[in-house]
Amino acid sequence: MGADRSLRDRFEHGLAAPICLTWELTWACNLACVHCLSSSGRRDPDELTTSEARTLIDEFAALKVFYVNVGGGEPTIRADFFELLEYAVDRKVGVKFSTNGTRITRTRAQRLASMDYVDVQVSLDGATRVVNDAVRGAGSYDAALLAMSELSDAGFGRFKISVVMTRENVGQLDHLEALAERFGAQLRLTRLRPSGRGVDSYESLRPTAAQNRALYDWLLAHPDTLTGDSFFHLSAFGEALEGLNLCGAGRVVCLVDPIGDVYACPFVIHEEFRAGNVRSSGFRNVWQNSELFRSLREPGNAGACASCGSYDACRGGCMAAKFFTGLEMSDPDPECVFGHGEAALAAKKLTLRPTSSPDHSRKVPVAISAR
Amino acid sequence: MVAPVRAKAPFDPESPARLHPDVALRDESFGALAYHFQNRRLVFLKSRALVELVVDLEHHECARAAVAAHVGIDEVDAYVAALGRLYDAEVIDGR
Image (cartoon, each protein chain N blue to C red):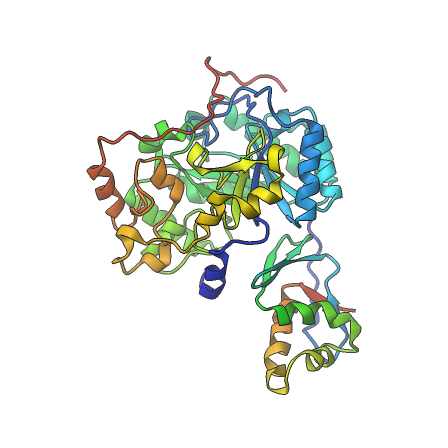
């Protein structure tokens, strides 16, 4: 699929409904990961009610959104989590949900294993306790591994282990792959973005240029690894990685947050990229008619990248990574493989960087609670 | 749950075919998106003509007859080949 340019050109104009829709059910979370893209922690009293959530699922079904990526916060904290899960799959809206694993008990693992159209992604940001817990908090590694055991023992099948690539874990790729094999799971790697609390941790955690090269080579050698198309900026190294190699924001991707606000992608939670709200106008209307999404579906402006021979490979990279590092949309990706991003960043050192709009971080340190 | 791997018969354009019962289609400006609810794969049907052909397969005695009813003589081979790829991707199957 990586080489299919005609299809990519069509995708740039947007689809009738998203392919990759992320729905954050809640901001409540019992962890406080340093890179949390939604700055989660505390529940918001204005979160969609069960009935509003069901109405939204009805809309997804009518639009033939074949599956949604459910996240948070920790989505299983919502008291109606299983109710909504069942409501969705009964209407043929498949659910892939991300969890930190702390609440995946044996009973819940067995319940999940009995359901069709449900995928589980357990988040883990290191192959070792030290590397993982530095990002996700003390106890989070053990909790995630326990959840993986429960899913495996319950016969869930091929769940996913979802890893955000950082400076500390790129060197653990083979180890992570072995860990996934041990549990009969599939490895999913995604890019660290400077979004949410990642605004503060991005500089110290993002992979170095040499690590990005090593990651690219590893991905080419392991084409079955899931990536959510998140490393397309690395395709500028040469051969295109698997996937559409395109920023899908507002074209094939969007985010619905816990209060029903719709954003262009999960990594640009900021007023500038808010397209509307499902409560006031319905999801279909926002997706099809919002001014923001319409403008994102216009042909891109190559800007500073126009003269680069690799623009066709990376299309200037990730919009969110540029935005939250203070770059313009016409600038190169901050992790441009040719170093053009570093140069652009250096030139802008004094400008104020934007921060994600809603912040539900907790004000006190978090300890992992009992299940 | 992972289904046991079974050797699948190769695509035979002379046999009856249909849209796979686990596949849902969504119309798009370029054609359609096909989603397979069991193997969770998305496949792109890149023209309206191909979408109409796939949906109509079940009304013909074999895949080749369906193709002949939908496209001109000089396009038959290309469309039979396209159906072969959709068969391998489990978007269509035999009936």
